Image (cartoon, rainbow, N blue to C red; front, top):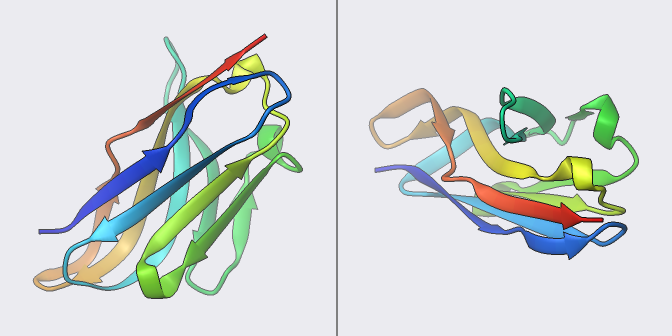
Length: 121
């Protein structure tokens, strides 16, 4: 059974940094796109950043220059480095794997359990 396991996040003051990681666990063969989304209280889930297996990245305008997404294809793991954080970055961050191929799985879409990121002023 495939699942995404997130780690990292936590509490930081404004201007600080945090990192997140997310690993796909199970008999995974490949993942097309991995990404991070976030959901703040009372708001819809929104895209933060995505990265393809070839390394092409896409960022929400609000995080460009602050956040960096990367991945290790051999470990089926995606990372998010968050710098110069602001209180408005407070949210639950979810990782996503799309186009996942695994034993008995072709083209699956999976979500992590979510990681809380809280930025205080």
